[in-house]
Length: 201
Ligand SMILES: [Fe+2]
Ligand SMILES: [Fe+2]
Image (tube, rainbow, N blue to C red; front, side, top):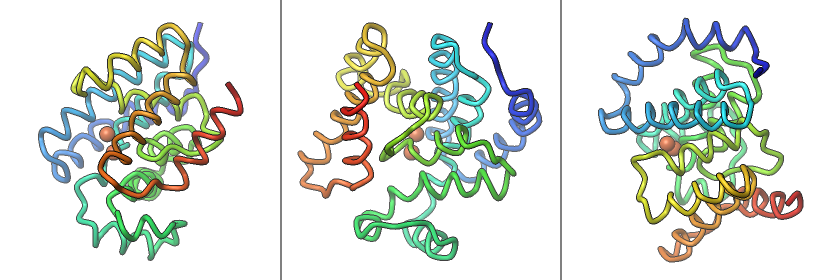
């Protein structure tokens, strides 16, 4: 029997239509479909692990809500709301969409649960000390059925055989390889997240 937070269950039920209609105005159809697949995948992963799937689902529905904001808007919001930034955020403001999406979840949709907000905030760069729900959202975003099979299939296999933390580490490594391949800078949050995972495995 999975223990779950009744408040989140209720919040998901009442907020979902509002979130969906907001997303339909702010993201493309293709993005909306990705978000829906992440929610479905995160729900499945959470259930498999005996975690609160309502939290995983709510977090997933909002994880990319600022994904299509222009870079200038992301930077403007981040500065205005005092989001902690690294110099890489100024070079590649797009990565801020995760932290800005978490801010929208908090301010527009009144979400205060640390797991739900963590899943949104960490889904791109990861972070040290992520909760299990937060990692479920990270993993669901990286491995939802729309993702390239060559990237996602080995990670799904690791999740099945070695568990959540190993799969998240593999997803981080996979994303880092792409960043290195493209000669892009590595965000310090990802390095910290990876070192943290190595320390707990
Ligand atoms: Fe994203
Ligand atoms: Fe996403």
